[in-house]
Length: 448
Ligand SMILES: Nc1ncnc2c1ncn2[C@@H]1O[C@H](COP(=O)(O)OP(=O)(O)OP(=O)(O)O)[C@@H](O)[C@H]1O
Ligand SMILES: [Mg+2]
Image (tube, rainbow, N blue to C red; front, top):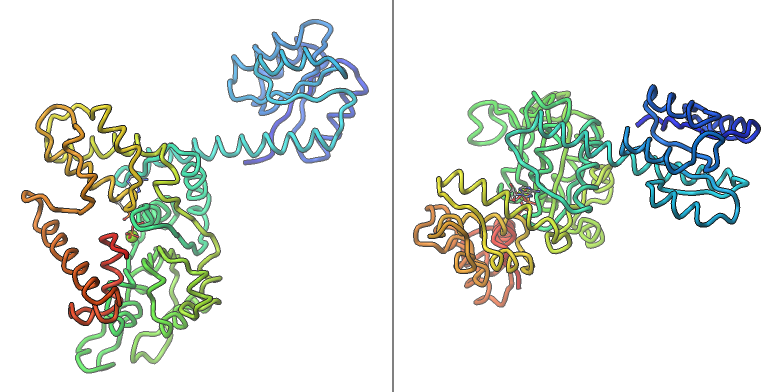
């Protein structure tokens, strides 16, 4: 936002000039009025953000002027100036809609402080309006739902960072929406018509990850019968999303660091580096600071990635998002499964709001989808909620993926228990690598 436009309404010439000049020097666009009548005129003509209003004017009283301003622009911020000691005036001004008041003689530092505070508030309101508009216009496929203050801040950060090319690191527990946020940043950026390429660093076996990322030349290794482009090259001019970055092996971390610094990659077996123009977004549900301490994550890479950090709060920390998410997924799955469900009973909603959702938004989404599919009546009731048994996909009528997932989950838990939760052993007995095991444990929300 540019600096606020301020209207100074004050009948005393010296005071008016003093305030106007002071604010103009601070870089604000300043208008001034010596009477109520002029003030109304200026206010109608200009887009005023903040009014500095003397309570006592020759032709009108401050209160009716406040009401007038608020009627024309409900978002205008008014700072009232009252004579020293007239508390009643200050109180009635605040009641009429002024947001701050100062007493004469005006302390200029205090004035500036209050204006800055208001500017921050105006800025946030505008960012949110911009976000909503942008979302409505340009982002119809992916939905991002929230109402909590914490998520409003996240949303405002997303909008601001999307416009830049900064590398960002998205952190948050499993299911909090890290991938949704990565999608959003890309879709709101100037790269939106270019590819968004996603790599899940923990799902790809360690020995394949490097060639996945950087590609290879024909003959680089046995089996490399053809040149293959890596994900970085595929993402050229666009965005690469490095998911589960905390699981990237150390050797690759140093290669990634070089890519970020040099903005070029080398294919396996390649002779020349290739210039690339890629915006990097990374995500993790691990605490990278701790991983750095334990030597599992390179500190220099951490700082390179952490240029902008977006921390997604767990759903437990923003319970007032639950109702809007319930309604959103209810509608989504009601439409998808063509059910005629009209809503959710109050008891069912209350249970949801009280629940802690260790699997965060993903778990809420799963619960709602199952409830919609299972519900027999027009309203979802407590019986339709599978909250006590927090297992995904236990329904006999679930999709193959759900059922397989559920079996896999049970097998993993069993293997872990049998091996006293020693992941190396459990992984070996399941015939999977430890990294894949960790990935699956995250996915299914399995922990000791
Ligand atoms: N604010 C939101 N509004 C609507 N849907 C959301 C929101 N946040 C998350 N979701 C949905 O919840 C599910 C999980 O989100 P996502 O995959 O982005 O989580 P994640 O943080 O990447 O999880 P993981 O760490 O397990 O990969 C998705 O289906 C996503 O669409
Ligand atoms: Mg994810």
